[in-house]
Image (cartoon, rainbow, N blue to C red; front, side, top):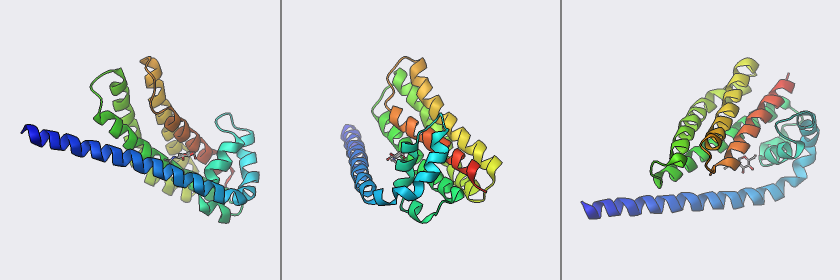
Length: 196
Ligand SMILES: *[C@@H]1O[C@H](CO)[C@@H](O)[C@H](O)[C@H]1NC(C)=O
């Protein structure tokens, strides 16, 4: 029994390292891609200036870096609807990765304040991940009302997750992730508002 539990513990540890390591690798790859795609930045710059210039939620640079990280942006040709769909897809990827990170963080925590906050975040991001396919489909279908409320729910979920740590007066291990998800959702909304 003990050895079985120890084996399970080792398996979880290996899984965790694999998860963290693959995350690092993906990040390294994303950075390489970003360098390659800088030549495509000018094509998205006007759209990013339009939505980022007047936004209190994200700036032009965030928009350029986010859309620039996706190869499809280069061929979207000043199409706000297409850009919004790309931002929605980036949000899906982001929320999925964040949900997995939260799961991994919870594997090695007891029941302290941080763990309770993380569990609340787990529920919030679980909801975002579940809704994202429908949300992205609504963006693609230019169903602005449905898409906007769905994206706003994602932005609120990210903010609520982050606020939980603040209220409990503990450090958030997912500040960057919450910030990215919040901004990506707001970016998708702003781009969709400009779409015909
Ligand atoms: C999440 O989105 C941000 C902003 O676009 C990006 O920099 C980051 O690499 C993304 N992370 C993942 C895991 O997709």
